[in-house]
Length: 272
Image (cartoon, rainbow, N blue to C red; front, top):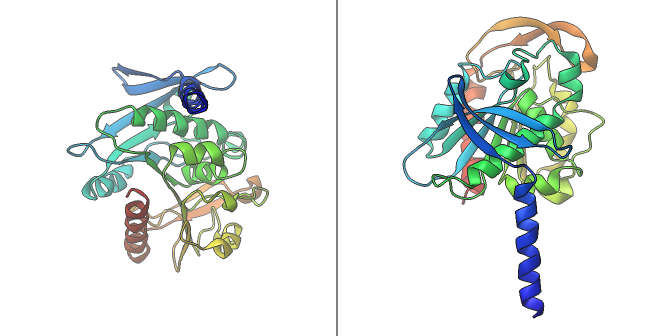
């Protein structure tokens, strides 16, 4: 009888966890999207673009930066597919009418939490699909990496672990006031560039002391912000402390190759 009761309680908890988001998938002339309800019972809508490999395979969730989903995202989409994974690109900005949020101080500093719930909803939807196997991984870039950094804290990490197999954060903004809960051992890999003047490495470097089999901190010499996206430009935008200053984006082939190799290794390790 005790065993039956335990099974019943587990089933109820599982249904509650899934039912909280009320996920619905829809198509429109403007692309596919899913809607879900947050903890305040407010409906949220996120765009999704799905890239499938053959058969039932693990899935990578792609979390964009403050500029929204850009064409250079396809570099990583194609890599993930070549490695044998499905990819779901989550667009958190299109249906919130944000466009490019790189100059939006309030959004960059105060509202990445809603993107955590976007990721959770996408993960739950993915795990219901016949082409997926297991829990997806999440890979975030810049603002998307900041989302993952916050998702690793004690307020979120329990649910993060239940829905995401591992997280990979590229050049995140590591809040000095956010203490990541490493004791929860949510597998995470962080990539930073030593020359980054937008989301500087020194904000994250303290995490290097947590190096373990479930946490991997990678720092790249001579690498600026966005070393992997194939663009060289200077943007005047919001950075540390909310100051608007010139920020360098520059491609670095060596860092690009090394970070790709490290990412591939990490995904293989936790998709087993």
